[in-house]
Length: 103
Image 1 (spheres, rainbow, N blue to C red):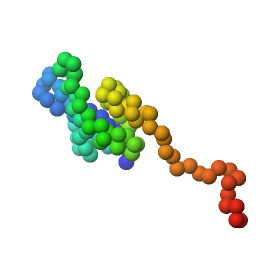
Image 2: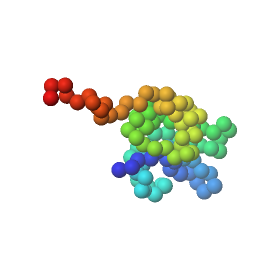
Image 3: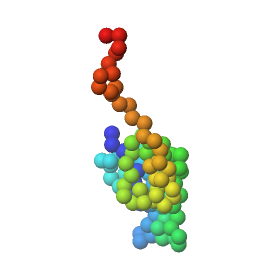
Image 4: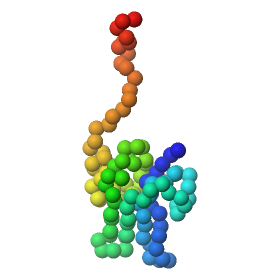
């Protein structure tokens, strides 16, 4: 299951507002979603960008990929910088020649 963090449009005609949601990649833009993690209102001055930092970081750590627009929103809020600065933990295979010494 490929998961993306993307925008879901809400609001009236010609008055867009968006929710930042976690959804499966194959679903439609305004279709089912897994979780709402924030709001984005581009019509305000300055634009409203409210994202739950804990939920966003949790989904990014799980491997959810943000769309380009959501990545810019996360960058402006400061969440993307925190995620990019975290050390990557990866389960890697043992180094060559480091087999069991008792064998």
